[in-house]
Image (cartoon, rainbow, N blue to C red):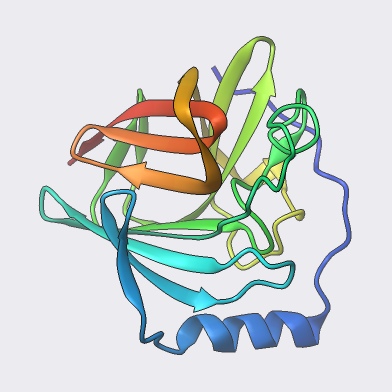
Length: 192
């Protein structure tokens, strides 16, 4: 089922800020660690203190990367004082839009996603938590345009114990997960 969503409100990024972000993301970072089952490299520190990372996975001969801002909870409560909020699109992170890159076709739930670059979003709507895969890339994280949606996929949501103080996106051979506060949301994946 495909559902159109209203665009998120919020200011855009100035052209000079976009250029600085593109330059920062194109420069190699020297510090790598393991994160969410993949190899994480800090891209830049983030404008509001949320580091921007790029995490790389090799799954079933597919090279998959996700670049996202990793906010901290700082005493806030997911769903009440920090995203994801009911009926609001969330960029799955902070600052720039979260970007997925894959060199092989992937299935997220029942949705076939061809190899390429996409942005990832979520929305908690009608008692379902949806992963939104969108073909528009390069935008600031509040510049969501539903006209570019490729798929909406329902995710399973459960409680995370202990809670994740900092956002973590994870991939393994079977599952994509979002761990944030006491929430973990997941969807089955399959590499073609």
